Amino acid sequence: MKEKVKLYGSVLILILFIPWLLTVYLRGGMSGYFVSPDADEQLEEQVVSVLASEIPADYEMECLKAQAIIVRTNLCREDGENETGWDETAMQQAWGEDYEKNLGKIRTAAAETEGMVLTFEGELIQAAYHTAANAETRDAADVPGQEAYTYLQSVDSPDDILADGFLYVGYMEKTALAEVIAGLFPDETIDPELLPDTLQVTERDDADYVTRVQYGSTVVNGEAVRSALGLSSACFYFSELEGKIRIVTKGIGHGLGFSQYGAQQLALKGYSCAELLHYYYTDVEIEMR
Image 1 (cartoon, rainbow, N blue to C red):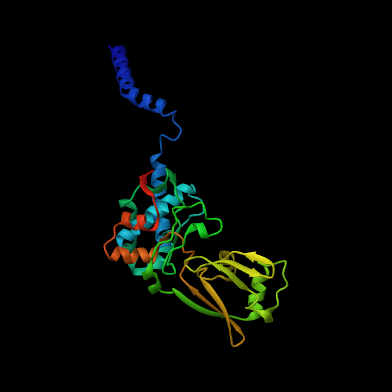
Image 2 (cartoon, rainbow, N blue to C red):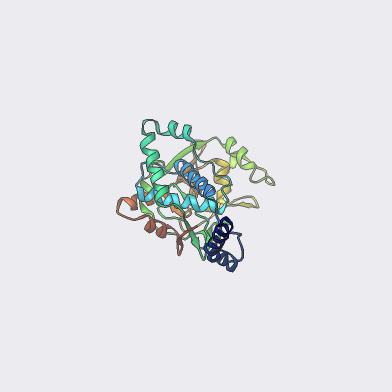
């Protein structure tokens, strides 16, 4: 009798698993078919951690949800590398007495978009984002090294000019500027006294971000200059005032893709998470990973 029970049990198990086994076979085996629940949970916790560090928690929920999808897309695209986010201590230090409330909002944004990612023609996108654009976002076709990302097109984002820190004005000694740019133009002899006239901005894109800077016969891109000088954006201007270099920047970040401040203002006007993403990214799809 026991042998019959074992036999019937084995047959039942086989019957239950035959459809699953056939599906796996038709899909080409196990690879890419089964995702560990632990891996999913780990990813979603990482989304919470990174999301907390990347956007103000007091933003509208639809804006936070859009950013959560951006975070998840980039984590999946990069296999979670180079994205650490905030731990509990960092969140408490940043939010203080609002810790519980803010963490609740961040977790809600992640939970309500769980598994959602952005794709273009079936592939995960480079979900570029920034704090605030110069009234319009940039077209990737105009940015060196980003030309392939055709879904990053320029769109109007006029409310960005109201963002805190949108306009920056600073000053540098000529000798200090010369020391910094010497690393960008190693084949040139930098004369501090001739700055800023000899540091020529030779090209800007349609959103007014600098794409080419020339000193002597050497040309570098605007993002390289921005990085070297620690500027808030590549929409910058140099001039001389009372013997010093006056530097003016507009916008915060590289200006590509999703503008967080612009999206926040649209969310306040009633835009949904999906509408925000489709506004700032062209011809993309929101899919489940």
